[in-house]
Image 1 (cartoon, rainbow, N blue to C red):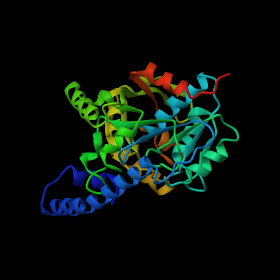
Image 2: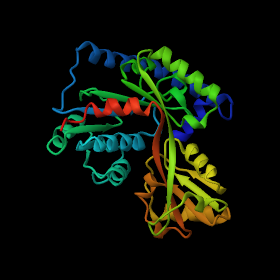
Image 3: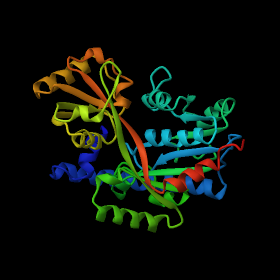
Image 4: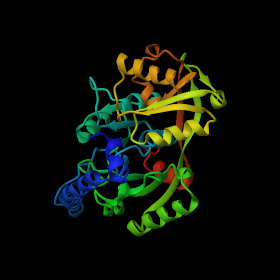
Amino acid sequence: MDHQSLMSILSGAGGGLWPSALRAALAAVAVPYARVMHLRRWAYRSGLRKSHAAGLPVICVGNMTTGGTGKTPMVAWVVWRLKDAGATPAILTRGYKATAGKSDEAELLNRLCNVEVVTNADRLAGARYAAAGADVLVMDDGFQHRRLRRDLDIVLVDASRPLGFGHCLPRGLLREPLTALKDAHAIVITRSDHVEETELSSLRARIARLAPAVAVHLAVHRPTKLIDPAGEHVPLEALRGKRAFAFCGLGNPEAFFMTVRRLGADLAGCCALADHVRYDPAAAEALSGQARSAGAEVMVTTQKDAVKIDSEGFSLPLWQVAVEMDVVQGAEELTDRIRTLAPRS
């Protein structure tokens, strides 16, 4: 079952007897899973299981749920603050759905940050390898990976899909119980501009109850430029008024489609593909056909998708939207915490 199908079932979309029965079955499985994850975290908290040091500072950017919360742009945000402080950071990633040792996140992070990106499912081994050429490590998607000791845990919560329906997998989208939030050092609510102020205030209040001692910051995904089929940077305004067909393989595709609309495009159609989808000639042809049928004049995707795409396989011009994380509340405080881990010159 793909992520979008699971989202539909969990949200109750469509109703009916079958989805209701399936949600009940998923709930029965979720209870033992939640207990296992709770006990696992307790074992590390109590010292029953040991975390191992990498020999240099480690900053982790993670989340509580499956699906996209903005970890890749947040990792880039952290890396650039370390570089501005004179550090030589390296990035650790597990390489989820990697092909030939490469993943879309690793490829994009390398382009965005221009630092070494170490792909290894064994984060501890990856950290020890990276330590030879770096003085601080940034771990992508590692909040549940406790074997590697970290000095700063930044946990992301997507305001548009907060807290995974309140249940652990497979009944909800939580990777572990919400009590784990207490182990974070900082919580960043991403896409904070995608919800009404009352909804955002309610989310902040709930987080405060779950993790009262943890600082909470607000962030938005900020489009910065378009990249045209020739790889040239063009202003965001170039998309305004164009009939566009948007597609992506993300954990939260609707957020991307909303971004395209906000840029002023006339969204002729859109297609949400599986997270980490691989693009082959057949996929390019099928997407191009959908775009032409919708009457689109351009196609639009994300930078994360574009690293896996040969744009020559598309029959319409393919543009990318470049996005950066912008911490709009608490940026100075979070930057100071990051810089304390940069080596002193």
